[in-house]
Image (cartoon, rainbow, N blue to C red; front, side, top):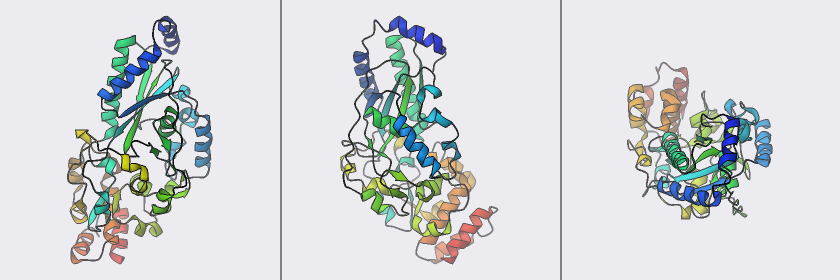
Length: 363
């Protein structure tokens, strides 16, 4: 929350609760959110008891793989008041990121190109959205005076998809991502935890029906059941979160995906209603929407850090970047150029990189 302590928060609440029209304030907050570039904003309470049960079961089955941070904070993730004392409501926002005129299937069908998940083509969304949420909080503060709040964008133990679903921004589809009837799946989520007793919005019904398109298209079979993803098989996990070697049986299934995977989003029929992003910061940079694998493989660490400055890709580091590209080159049809590029990395200082290069050459 803000600098006023928890006791102070509730004294403050009592002071202004009788003079503020919270329904009217919520309407104004939604208008401010649209002005700040959020396509949708809605409010939920903090009851995530059902989501907590589902999340704990997912953890118990080991579906989080090496993402130990998913279990590190106990119930703070599913009980907002434990993470931020005094929280009464959560303002959820979504922001579109799909580039206009982009054709991901063209890249996926060309084994000479490297596929980068579309959310990572531009600048890192965390900072951009968090700044917008801070601006929103300042506007609220100007209207009601100091209040308790804290902004999150995938930056703390928060069940963001469950919260957004409870607020009515969409429903969690069978691929576990949020889906909205009027917007599909191509959007980021953010939250503003607050002590303001705003009226809550109704949740949206599940409209997946009998569709299994996302399950059927997953290259590695990571969607092991409707609404349940085993991260250990997910290409996004394998190329981004996994720090060591990619399991050999899964390497051929990665195709040319070098950072993340969008197949389940591409398959979702609700994405016919998605809208391209207008955010300049989300526009593709460095030609990453359709770059040659060999060109990416030749980037030195200095080039990797320089070209991906401000990009979410930077967090995986140069070694995992090379590891992922080596696998993609191994999955491409053999050519003298690919063989030469791989051989140039046979003496790389990293054993992990050398291992994946040897595997690629054996293919």
